[in-house]
Length: 192
Image (cartoon, rainbow, N blue to C red):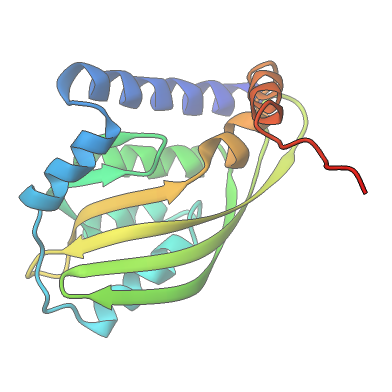
């Protein structure tokens, strides 16, 4: 039954969000703090960026969790809009959850921007998952802000994408609520 992977993802997401709210300030403040705490190196190699881009492009592949264990530093700032953590082990478990849920993710890199220690990956993502009974395909765009340490490991990973459109709107009941809220912000069509 496909319900068990959904329960795992929702519980993992809720656990990650709950622990963040109890231990850290809110999302914008956490990001601002990370910008100061995880300064990163400006000695970023093309290989560092290519390896991470390839990893991101193949999320959900059988080796996703193993690669996450190699690519991320043990202490870091990680926020993909579903989970905030400062611990690589949590990141590894998070990516293993994608594998276990048989989530299929295709990420296409649209642009890579590098400015000092900051790397911005602009991407388009299609993911296929089964929230309860029906398989859905989600299409979204986003940006990942990365910083690397001198060993070439990621010490800061901040995603900017619309999880309401990309994930939560596809969850039964919750999706209906999110779509209803989104519809309140759609401007009325003006007359001819």
